[in-house]
Length: 136
Image 1: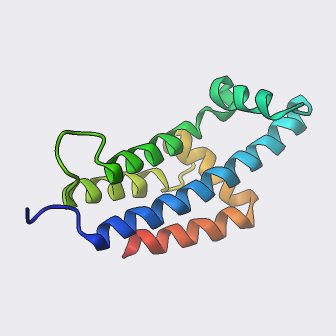
Image 2: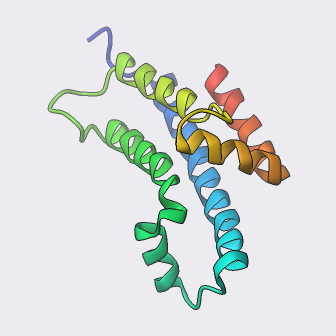
């Protein structure tokens, strides 16, 4: 069909997904450091995983991981009985743009993302890369 997901859009989503995974990892690492400064050392990977899944400190990062999963499902054709379309890709890209719009007064994710951008040059660099991918 004419609206089926093009190879260009598929590649764009893949690249965006990779960048978002890197951002998620970087934000997790940054939040872990902040958590450990405030509450003490996390003793092992299992404890860290449990904190990421259940502790409110890390809750804001779930929005990013949920969107990554939606991209995965779209690329794999798992979120519906139909094949992914250009419209699906554009909707996802719009959601990513909205999520990654840092704001002092936006959603909890946007507020925390704004702070992360203020605190980490690495987050700024990765944000810039993602904005270039989103602008295409």
